[in-house]
Length: 542
Image (tube, rainbow, N blue to C red; front, side, top):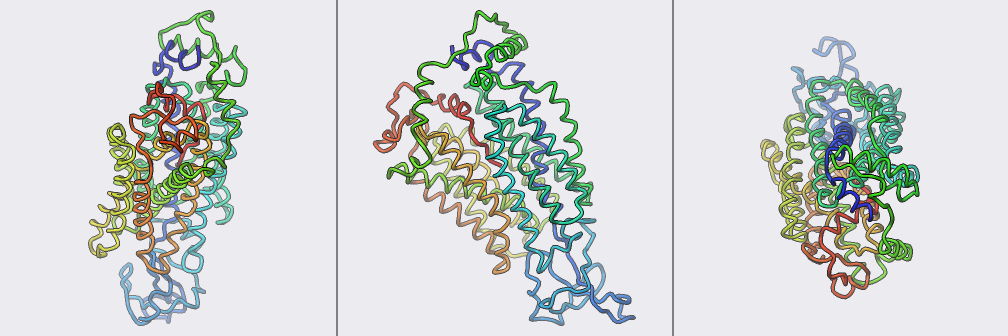
């Protein structure tokens, strides 16, 4: 019998697997912390430029101040009204031109944040782009980590990479809290980003490799819920800890508690089997069977790859990434799916990392955005059974339209803008949950792994670009939301050119796609997707 048949015998989602998912899901909370903490650590409070202030003018000696709006407008935005006055902390202070820079240093408001990366290293005006670049470098770490640790996990096993990832994440995360300058901080955060990919990707794979085919999709959603819980919890932690170094330390130091995973986290029996370590795999399977209350003798199980699987592996070796774009229909579908991966992650992190732009309390907005994750991921469980194509199209359209409408809302209606942004976040989160399943059903078996891998790379490229998009505020403060609105709408239109895959057999070959998109294996059920994809070790998106 093959490994999935063994899982059915010992219990596809018994006590052993449920315990495993506890160990897998706990780090998801801290992964969400690391992914989103820059919302608070990189925030830019209202700030004033120190220059020469005549004694007796209310500011004290040497406290002449130029005021710069911190809501995303450029430092030169007040050049045309140099004598305007804005009130800040009870002081009526003149606004003067910023074209010559701030030679006296900056004074930042401490009403919301005691300190941030921006306040400590003066990342405003001519240095403001460094803040966005730092966020992009972190996202680039996610991309590098996925490539590097994905390959290492195939060689050394999921468990080993998860343990290394958690350890390195704790060490470098704590190190970032003590960074002596911005460049060291960005470097340390880059490494943390690599480890986030290592942990989230291999934890997902380890879980799916131990879970029976019928429960894999549900089990995957469970990890998403814990990430969403971390999303919400971060708002409370950041509210209580307003100093960026202490906040960075608070989200990183608990990572050392995962040291006990050395004794409780199991290896993947499927990986052991694939690497010819049959005795160790048998020991783990027997242990899992005992915990699940379905004990087996060694004589009851025979671990072997079926002839069909062997033939499939031989077929897979004949294909490469080039085959994704070699033929007309496959090329059209591949390019559309790559764009969908890109735009989903672009908008997801574009909205998530810039919640301060919506004008409401940043902590409340963070909590609301986190709460939206739960229903958005849950609703897809119901809509996907009806139509993959329409579900993808509708959620992209909802996300894009909501983002675009925020542009037309006046600044004094910040609550309306936040509600629209929340609706946009709902649509994009649901769309992001769908795109992996939809892609796996559109790509034929022989290049499915290559297709999902390329889609994952496009998604991470979207994550890298997302913080950079906000530099468009120097052109127009509405430009980022226009981009985040139009891109999903284009994706929704392109989705119309993709095939419907719900309740249809999966395509096996490129020829199947080029003919009608219908698999020649008419007997293959829809459940085969969830049975096959984890075997192919898919790349998971952040």
